[in-house]
Amino acid sequence: MTPKAYTHKDAVPYRPVDWTGLYPPAYEKGTVPHHVAIVMDGNGRWANRRGLTRVEGHKAGEAALLDVVAGAIQAGVKHLSVYAFSTENWSRSPDEVRFLMGFNRDVLHRRRDQLNEWGVRVRWAGRRPRLWSSVIKELQYAEQLTADNDVLTLTMCVNYGGRVELVDAMKQIAEEVAAGRVRPSAVSEKLIRRHLYLPDMPDVDLFVRSSGEQRTSNFLLWESAYAEFVFLDTLWPDFSRQDLWEAIDRYLGRNRRFGGAVDTPHVARGGNA
Ligand code: IPE
Ligand code: IPE
Ligand code: MG
Image (cartoon, rainbow, N blue to C red; front, side, top):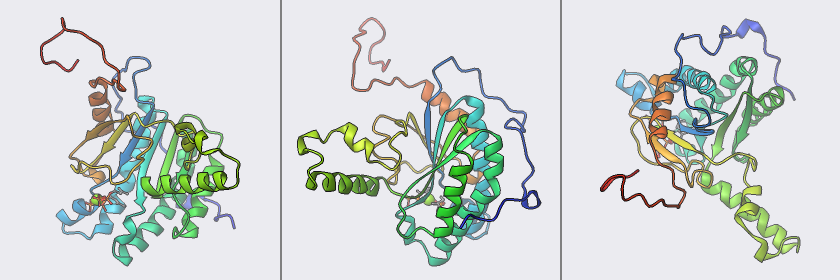
C-alpha cells in the first residue's frame, strides 16, 4: 500500500536552501568532497544535559539534518549518506527503538516534498529483516518520488551495518559460485562492490562524526576504506551547515595519497605535505 499522500496541511514551511542567509566559502573547482558520510551522533547526550529524555534529542536532530542537507547542496556535495539507525541500535530500550522507527517514518513523510523541491534524490541503504514495514514503505515512496532528481543524492542508512552489508554480499556471491555462475577466481573488489546495497554509491571522500566520539560504529566500512575522517565535538542537534563546511575545510587541508608517494625532500623536514 502506498503511504497516504502528503498534504500541505502537515507541511513544514517550504524554504529555499539558503534560507539562513549563510553561504559556504568559494571552493576551488573539483575540490569539494563528492561523497560525504555522516554519523549523526549525540542526540541522547544533548537531551540528557538539558534534563530531557533521549527521544527529545532525536526530535531536535531533524532540523539539523535538513540544515546539513541544504548546506551540502550549497557546497556542491553530490552524495550525502547519513546514519539514521544502525543494526546495533536494536539493543536500545524497546521504547527508544519504537520511537526511532516511528520517527524515521514520520521524518521521511514530513520532509520528502521539501527534499524533492530541492532536487534531492532519496535512497535507502540497509537491511529489511526487523525494519518496520511502515519505514520501508516511506523509504520506497521517497525513492520513487525523487528518483529523477540529481542535485544531491541523500542516502538514508536505516537498519544499516557495514559488516552485515558485507555478509549479505558474500552470501549472494557464495550462492552464485555454488550455482556455477561465478568462478571463485573471479571474485574481485569489483564483484563484491556489485553486491553491496547500492552498487553505484561512490566511495566516501569525507567521513564526519558529530559528538566527539572517534569511531566508525560500523558505518560504510567498505565504502570508507580511503575516506578522510573528521570528528567534531558538536552534538548532532546543535550541528548545522556551518559544521559541515568546517569539516569540508579540514578535508581540503588533507593530503590524500591513496597509497602513493611523492618524494619532496626540498619541501620541509618532518612535514606531511
Ligand atoms: C544518535 O544519537 C542517534 C542514533 C543512534 C539513532 P544517540 O542516540 O546515539 O545519542 P548519544 O550518543 O547517546 O548521545
Ligand atoms: C551510531 O551511533 C549509529 C547512528 C548514529 C545511527 P551510536 O551512538 O549507536 O554508536 P556507538 O554506540 O556510540 O558506537
Ligand atoms: Mg550515540
